[in-house]
Length: 187
Length: 199
Image (cartoon, rainbow over the protein chains, first blue to last red):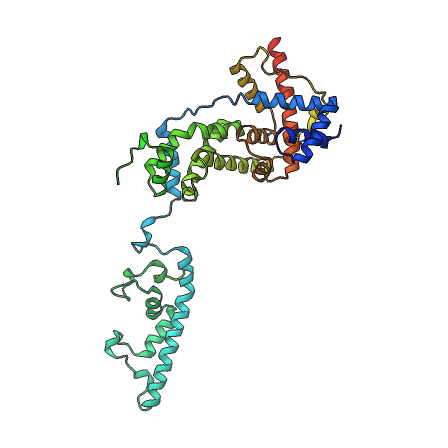
């Protein structure tokens, strides 16, 4: 008998065969003693396995078993309060900000330079190195000095405010109020 | 909303409460079904430590995926499937680490059972139910993990060929072949055990 026939007999007993093929297998089992023997053996195994498995019980106490599961759950659980309290910035946001801060700074500086260019056009007598930001802006240093400092640090107050969006930091220049990734973009 | 009476609540009620993030009802579910999940892990792994670790991992995964449970099947069926998948992943990784011996390769292809004559096996003959369970357990432990797993999934989890093929990452033809040789080997092992018992 072919191996294919044996597998078909098994599929026939397991109800995994089409009705058309089932009729063929029924004929084979009735006519062929070898096929009949295969079918009988498979039926016997199926019958014995119906008795079921030996029961297995866990030795561990309820507290011990659950304690280990609970610890693992807590270890893998994300902190749900993150949205309410501005804690450490997620890694993806941090890496994004590492790129956005210098780009934002450059954009802000460029905008300032264009703006001052317009001012200079309007008032060509006033020299650039003596230009002072109006006091309402909160900045009192000469622009040339401020630009130099920003260029060195690569971090600007403007970009920070733009990125933070709705977050309200009382003093944007107070380093203690800044998240770590803003203080030190190298992190 | 009335407080859930956890010890007397139905599984479904506990699952719905746990799906809202409450851990206490989940702990009750673990307590109720931990033996069943552990038993399935043990039947597949045949190692107490591995079964313990994998059953606990299944409960952790169950918690993490609990919101995906749609109440279409029973919670224990769903949990058992998670446990089986973890065991299968573990066994696959373990097997990959081992070098296939000639014996293993032969067993995959059917081994000695392919050449054995068919013997008549009468399971009910003078063997007590508990003793027979013990013999089945011994015989299952002697099967290769592929043969044992296919038998467990088909006979005890009542999965169809295509479901087993999906779980075991193989073709339906392979499932049929493994199941056939697993049954033949089991029959021969049980006959041998019966003969040993007579001696």
